[in-house]
Length: 67
Image: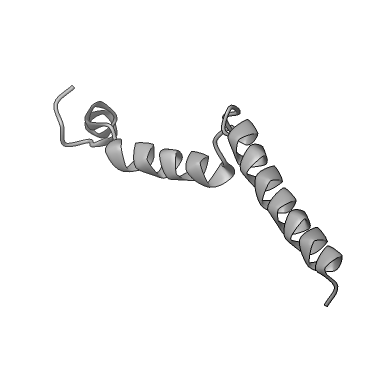
């Protein structure tokens, strides 16, 4: 292979590597909004933390409980 072709290929590969590093550094400055999966996980966690029924509501619905 010609020496000039080898040098051009090496320079081209190094330029691609340098541009990727610069892109990573630049994109690191931005913060992405939470994804839909994160929102779904948060909703599931909130639902697990809440009781399935409200004790006050149950006592109103239960005819045996004193009012």
